[in-house]
Length: 236
Image (cartoon, rainbow, N blue to C red; front, side, top):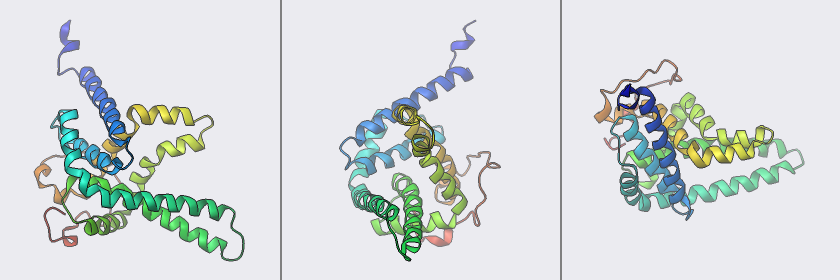
C-alpha cells in the first residue's frame, strides 16, 4: 500500500527530478536578473547539470551559489563580448532585411554564417566554463574548434537551444507557451539535454565519469570521438 511513497518508486523519483528541474530553472532565472551575471548563471547551471547526470544529487541552492561565485569573474570576459556580438548580429539581420543591390545576397550569406558560428560557440562556451579551467582565449578557441569538429552534435545542441524561439515565432500564439515553458523549466531542460550530448564530446576530459555508461545509439555520430590532440592540459 505504501510502496507508492518509497524513495525507490519510479513515479516518486520522476516527481523529485521534475521538482529539481523547476527549482533549478527558477534559481537560474533569479541569478540572471542583473544581466551581467547571465554568463556565470549559465556556467553554474551546467555545473549542476553535470552533477545531476552523474547521479551526485547536489544540494541545488548551495551548490549553485558555490559554482556561481567560482564562475562569475571568469565569465565576464566571455559573456560581455558575446552579448555585444549578439546585439550586433541582431542589428545586422534587421539591416539585411531591407538591403538591396547586387551585394545584398552575399552580405546576407556572410551574416548567416556568422550567426551559425555564434550559436555554435555560445552552445559550447558556458558548459566549458562550468566544467573546465582555461584561459579566456582558449575558451573561445576551443569552443569554436570543438563545435566545428563535432558538427552533428553542435547542430543538435543549437536546435535545442533555439527551440523556445522556434516555438514563439513559428507557432501561432506560441509566445505565451514559450514564455511559460522557459520560466518554469525550459532552460534547465535544455541544459540537461545538452549536458548528456556534450558529455560525449568531452568524455576524454572527464575521467571521473569514464565508468558511467549511457545509451548513445540515438546520438549523432561525430567524425572523431577523441580530441586528445586538441589540448595539452587535462583541464581542457
